[in-house]
Image (cartoon, rainbow, N blue to C red; front, top):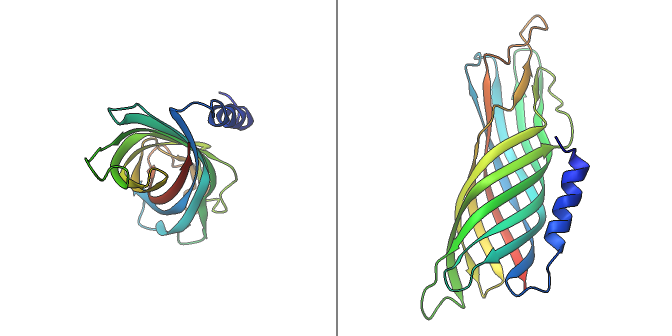
Length: 206
């Protein structure tokens, strides 16, 4: 698997090339997120306290003329907050990520008002690369977390996009769960999905 630095360089290059094309637009995006970690097959002694985080980065958008269908690719620094506690310890299991969402997008053209406001819907996969270690050593998560985005929003005056969506966690993100009283790894029996809400604002330049 390519390391984080290789992925980062490749994505920065993809976001930056082709700026002179009329079909491609570059933008900056920022917003807030709310973690919604889901445990299954886990003992009652594990509890989560999901908190608000933030996200910021750059995006590249392509929309096919006339039909309003295209895609956007983003490179985001994402900070998530989720405290976990058991009978013995408390700590953070998610913190800083390099998040790479790729969304299929459809902009709904409405006669007479589409130059002022244009609704849109989007869906697609996202990959988050963990940049640091958890402080809660009783649960350790994987470096790569996969999800699927589903959301909607609107574009104002062809430049400002406001959107909100929900990311469904796809893979089991836990790789180690410590049993109370010993160092036994319980991860084979416990499933943890990292789900989260995100609201963002983006400014796009032609």
